[in-house]
Length: 343
Length: 217
Image 1: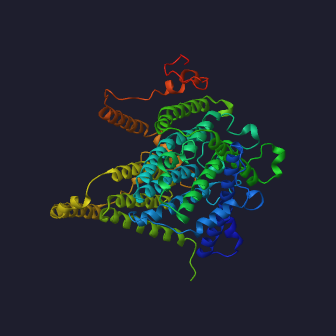
Image 2: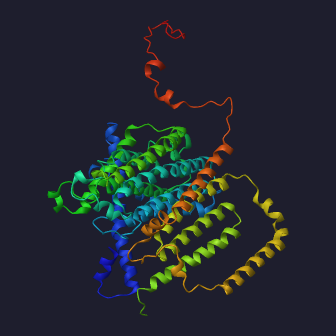
Image 3: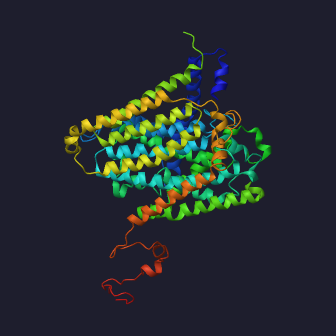
């Protein structure tokens, strides 16, 4: 993507190359931020529909502009920094969360080889960045100098470290079949229609990945770091205005990222479900599949009650870890045995 | 000003190197231990950037996932929970300066001696245990895998066993069975049904309900 834009300039030079990088980043980030705004709206509408409410319906047609109004409101509010807070870290934490949520998108392929960076280790990059995501939360929890925030930060740290393990094993299951860590190669391995997609042979690990992704992004039923009934709002409790908005945007950008990763790993990425539908551009298919993943995540929020903290830890370490380890062995065995769907 | 595009990796190198060194210094000089750990994380992260510039992207990602994503989180976790007055801890630190400086000098002298006497053997590439494929043909994830799981498989498995023993050791050392602890029995909790837990009683107005279960009042 960067090279394609760079070659458009005609001439060469380091400044032009940097410009090309910035342009390709903008080409991903701007639509992403707009998508985040609509994802918040989508999420609230689904939640409302399940509870037989109307949800946001005042600002703009069908309430479509609600997120923009909320954003503007947050933008105009005063930033309050608590007197006892560690000022620098308090302000860095939301920026870190937001930045990390955006930079993971660098390796998401929208078509074959169309990504900001088509890394050989793309999936490891996503794992690495999502493992960094915990710092924004733990830093904000500590810097706020507040009990609720600190408890939220600690819960989140333990939760994200635990579920990363099972996410890692699920990735191994898929990678063993594909034989590459490159995101584009993972989609290319599923090309040719819905019957080639990974969700058929890998359904059990898809479910494990989905539930772990909920825990990793602090979504209900695993939103214990911000459980309003016990911790008021957890690590976000001292934040107001834009700092809070950055947390909020980062959270939803992460949820969209997890939906996109699920689409790429299990639902064939940009690949059309039937070969006749190939005339529709690939990025639209990726968008539809990401929206499907987001819909699943939003539905879970609407009808699953919050887990208790000890149940959450038990599920991560005593259920998902052994289960995903078992599937690594199983899928590797099937690959070595040369079973068609798995090798 | 007309630079070739190749200047960008060099600039990136100097940026990452400067950040690594600077944050390394700040790990030691930061007054607050939590800040120290955060600087350490930045040092790890920029070291990962240096690995990427060398073309060792697999090692870079592992560095971030293992050290930054797991080890340093636990560091931070522990340091944040410590309830120590660090000003007090610092008071006697000046007494250790002579011995610290001595150790530093010895290390420096050793490194200088080593550095000046270092000669790379002429046939070093032929002596390597495994032939090195060119970087263009095999990218480094594959290269590491090919070496680790073939030539060094016993060393690799041995390292795994050592880690397993260390893990079991840590569990055995810290695990103790305490009496009188209430534990959650998840399967009993999950298998509870509404019928076992409550009953619906039709209360007529003016009459109460007996609290003894099973008897209507």
